[in-house]
Length: 442
Image (cartoon, rainbow, N blue to C red):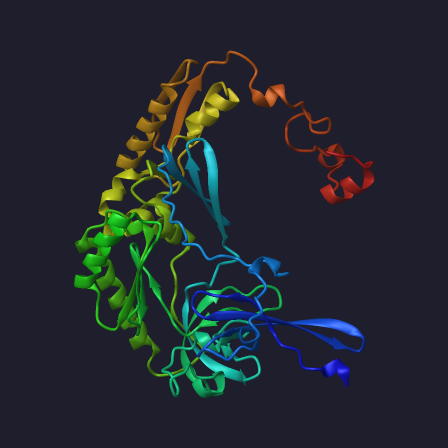
């Protein structure tokens, strides 16, 4: 039975805080097996090696390289000039981009047919408890049940430890959950029972006493914000200060906290009465979330090509950061830019659809004239007609881009339609005339 002969463990590394790494070499079935163990020494132990006065092997002979823990350096992001945000609203999606000078650095897209559930709070019902996985499946109203793990359940400790999943939750139990990660593929959404509410300058964590400040902020700013939190932090709520709180006053921090505390009380009130699963609190759309997370004082401007989206953003900023409203503008300059870019000439008619307010018509007309004032080609813009049309002329100097990079269609001759002569001369239905003609390509 020499294979199982006990061999003294070799101490490879002893940490500064009493952590010891040991290694043994054993033989099983004719093969050598190396066993490695890391333990925390509770008390000094008797060592035969010390009795024999044999020197221990130096750490450099260890086969496994060790890694020294170093203090993480906090690097403050350098200031970026000419930083701007552009918003494009289409019928099927919304796009938000961030530019640093001429360079595109961030791009966010949200389609009308797919939206994220992250941040939404639901009243969920436990469907299955799996002690082996330390997890439970919760029905929160989605097509697939979400999963929540024991560490994400908000509960008091049991005998000085965090409770196991079967101690914290029971099948059929209803409780508040928040989506932490959207469902992907066959996996359901990741849920947490420790909800939080994101504001303009901070994140509020109910039923908690935690406090944190973004490490991306300078030390002096962190100290100032910590002193402000000592005054305005509410009892029974944790607070995590965001990077956007840079230069924010104590009054702005307090206002943000008051708004989030009010939202949480509304959530608690809405959750009473059962009826799970159902939605309790819904996060705002992509545009508002991006503005909340990213649009700060270091941006030069924010351009939006939709009047409705412009009003939405301005309303949010008036309530959270009034000093940033002046940086938000509606982009109406695209018409003039396209005329110059495509070198379009002749008589041009522009239809400002559903623009009935005369004041708005004059603002758009003035912006159009200001944009065309940069054009070297002579233009003339007339007033808005009773039908909401703007007539203008632009001198034809040379062929535009469409003429330079295209040719007329060989089928329709550039008209954009295909004329079926048989249908016109003999009254044959278009479908029948099409069947009689030869195959063609457009």
